[in-house]
Image 1: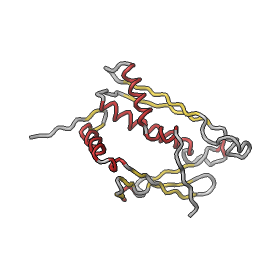
Image 2: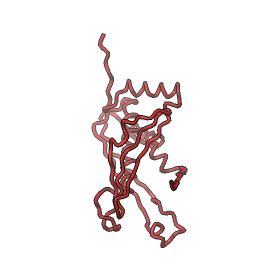
Image 3: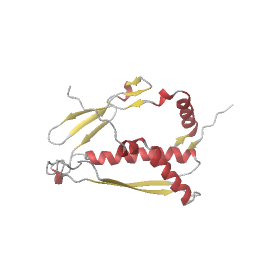
Image 4: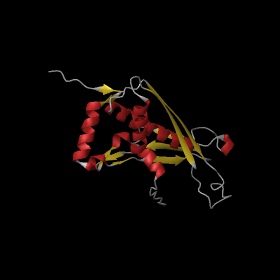
Length: 187
């Protein structure tokens, strides 16, 4: 007997539903810790690599050092413009998470995606960062995401509902919109 796998939008639906059911039965399987280790390279540049991934208390060392990332600032912001800025990484993280969330939920709902594009922007006022207005928040004042979906056979209402689900279920968006405890320790 040949077993068939259902793939929708590049997502293996059998694996997706299996994962959902496994987490439903054992919530600790949904507990994941990501790690990154960064090293300053002078000026505003940092080179970082992924650390081990921990899921349900089990460490996966195969991800340790598997991917590298660098960040710098544009020359207009006194960097050397050798890599994407931290602000651009925030936008990339949100774009990446939206993509995972959208592809999985579209596949689960039977929505076939022909193409998908995002345009993201974040507004910052650097006065607080520079110490000019320390009473003001140094973070972004707004992040905008424009989503363009080409999904033949789907109505605009279905696509609007899909985008709403993405905004409700994206872990990175949730991290950005609610207070998150960031514990910083000198070791």
